[in-house]
Amino acid sequence: MRAMGVSALRLVPQRQDMVAVAKVFAELAAARIDGQEAAARLDAMQMDATFSNGFWLGEAGYRRIARAS
Image 1: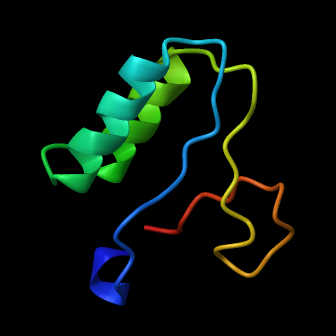
Image 2 (image 1 turned 90 degrees about the vertical axis):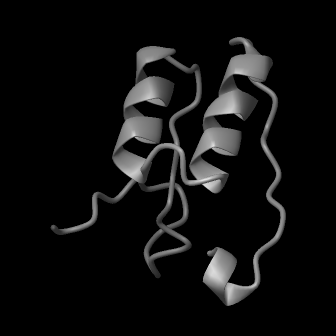
C-alpha cells in the first residue's frame, strides 16, 4: 500500500484495547512485523468485528479473503 502512495489509514474504534490495536498497525507500517504476524496478534485480541479485505481484492467488501501463497 505504501508503494501505491497510501500514507494513512483509519481504524474503526473497537471495545478492545485500541492502543494495542493501533500499535499492531504501527508495527506493520514500520515493517517490524509482517502481515501474518499482525493478523495473528489482532485475531488473538478476539475483536467484536471481523476484519475484511474483500473490497481491496475486488470481492464483496465484507469478506475476509486469505491470499494464496
